[in-house]
Image (cartoon, rainbow, N blue to C red):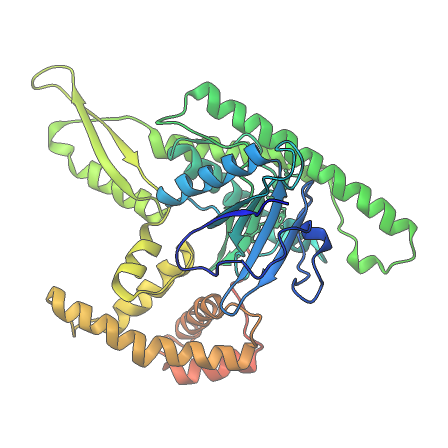
Length: 409
Ligand SMILES: Nc1ncnc2c1ncn2[C@@H]1O[C@H](COP(=O)(O)OP(=O)(O)OP(=O)(O)O)[C@@H](O)[C@H]1O
Ligand SMILES: [Mg+2]
């Protein structure tokens, strides 16, 4: 038997301890961890290493190579997709056979699949968040020139993101990357999403039937209504609104150039980075037309990472930056003072609190989301009391109340 060929990105284990001569489904259970997944056709296992857990998926060779290449390109563009780590080839297998190629990605920490999101109360309270997050991911990918070709509830992972949810692409087998997408390509992609989502909801409905027939307690059954079955159309409508907001061309008078800054701010608030402002005019003194060229949806998370080195999702980063600015207020005026204030805040405020959250919430809870929840709680206490609340006082109450998260809208 020939040897496997591994190509692994620097900074990760070499994966040579794994038995590549065997199919991943036959690997010893001692080496893998059982974690919930969305619906999928190809075999997937999760393997823990000292620092991280990795998702390992078997595919035919060409598909594995393609998926790996696409994930790398998406990563370069800072898209919300799982991190590609390596690709393994098994040259002794027929290249079309399942398992001739293997893609390794980094397990997305604190993520859940839609099945877990649906467990219990169903989409009910999280519906709005979920639909917005999904629409945001599609708009972000399209802005970056990515045609997905297989957007579905199972092909993304969900994470709590301050008061919102963040959705990350997990399956890039069908992705194509272009300089820019045509309207036809975008609409086609959205149609595929709507069809896939309808199929996903039908799957849940069928599982509910099964559960209802077995004698399992009803608490595990997700109650779906007609609107849930049309979820895809709802996502599509939100996507189209968002797309218009991101790409509309506006006309303005020459003394209204402030409107360009206002528009940039508005998109930044939504998390989008603005790379270029394209301005055109038809007559020498006539009105201007402008359009913004939007980049990825990482405005606040990039800033937080640049200033403090902290990794957070976009919504978390936005509230954490507010906290940083609140602490640095008045103290930092020059850029070097601001940089120093950020270091002080991280060491003296952020990290100690994160440790306390870890201690209180245990190792499986996401401490950064905990920090965002805590900030929200402190804010609500302050608006209630109409005075500033010290962090210690707010923290004790937050713990005593069971670490409440954001109220669901
Ligand atoms: N990096 C990762 N982090 C967390 N979960 C992951 C990761 N990669 C894969 N998964 C889980 O594995 C499942 C299957 O992955 P994926 O969708 O890529 O498989 P697939 O068999 O190619 O799917 P399809 O049937 O759509 O082709 C996902 O729904 C997700 O739950
Ligand atoms: Mg999939």
